[in-house]
Amino acid sequence: MVVPRFWRERRYRYNLIGTRCPECGTVYFPPRNVCPKCGRKSLGKMEEFQLSGEGKVYSYTIVHQNVLGFKYQKPYIMAIIETPEGPKITGQIVDVEPEKVYIGMPVKAVFRRIAEDGKAGIIQYGYKFVPDWNKMELEKEGT
Amino acid sequence: MVGIVTYGSYIPIYRIKTAEIARMWGDSPEHPEKGLNIQSKSVPGYDEDAATIAVEALRNALRRKNIPSEKIGAIFVGSESHPYAVKPTASLIAEVIGSYNAHAADLEFACKAGTAAMQNVYAMVKAGMIEYGVAIGTDTSQGQPGDALDYSASAGGTAFIIGKEGVIAEINETVSFVTDTPDFWRREGQRYPSHGGRFTGEPAYFKHIISAAKLLMEKMGTTAKDYDYVVFHQPNGKFPYRVGKRLGFTKEQIDPGLLTPYIGNTYSGATPTGLSAVLDISKPGDRILAVSFGSGAGSDAFDITVTEEMERFNRDAAPKVWDMIKRAKYIDYATYLKFRRMIVEVD
Ligand SMILES: [Zn+2]
Image (cartoon, rainbow over all chains, first blue to last red; front, side, top):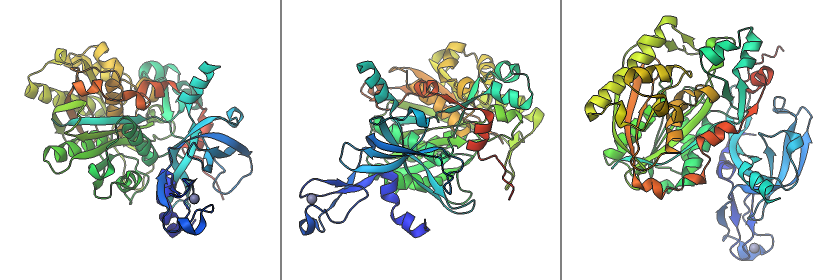
């Protein structure tokens, strides 16, 4: 990714900042300037909204292909995370073996290196997800 | 009253056993376990560095007590493994927490850059320049593969927010002792550090820690018996007991803050994370002595008293140090090399 675009998007990538429509209350991530439900009524009114970083695995896939930049991380887990605030977020799950991931697994957002532009370029930081160990233990105790 | 308002730590989940490192290099497994008293060390994941560790530690501190970003007037990040040679870690931290008017700077002083950060923030709060400030010690240190440091150099960090309001641990006094000592260094452009053999123990670690601790206790009119806990810099699991014995401290005072046997030496994160582990269990009125050591060489000593505010403080809102130590995933030496980017690819 080119430096200016990453720089513009850093706020929402660092802190999971999306937008919320004041008309209907829907939260969007990545942020939107207009609410698709409310259209013109929401124009210029969308508010910044920070997600809690909590969520559950909605679906996931294990990638074995040698995608550029992932050679040292494969196999890696890409997932869609369902958040309590509403938006579904795509992100990588780390710090867990692929066979231990399951639909509904509680996760939380963490701050990690996302990509780096070779050995001399900038390092891009942002969110990934890790298992929410405390919530998983509570679930175990409950069953 | 100036002191710690909130604190948080972060230790990566990955560990390598020192017996696995010994197996790889053909050393006796007794060498690290008995000789250094290190069973395992923490290893950063492939996508972790000193900056990501700093962010996680600071977020844990803010989970325990949220300080509005506009009230944070300083951010000092102490590390010897800042991700960039030129581009500060502190400005990334400022952006992450949204403290755009903070005085932000990176510090380096081998393993004592974290406590140097604490002293800088303490001074700015005491002088009335700022309301709150952030001090972080963080590292993902690396020894040369097969070298003695390969058994100990690890990753972790701790963030303190220091201020005057809502102090959970008052910093009663802090002093330093510093000399020009060639015990450990790394020249610009060199990947791994070098160490000066006979300079590493007595004239470096012991001389500086003992001098700083004695100076502080003389100033405060205290002896070892006046402290409930003591945290020393911990390059291995043996030196803290030896220096503690010479200063009159017992194993019981040392153990709660001695993490190196399980996670290795987190360098700039070491003394701050030991202190964090002690704060996790301390009660109002407990008195703590913390003394760091950084090669090159210097020590910062702190006399700290836990306040009544600790009773109201939400310690459980973030993971405690010993809980993070217990949550471990063990990796082999080859995975360790992969995570640490030490595999050389030939074109
Ligand atoms: Zn709407």
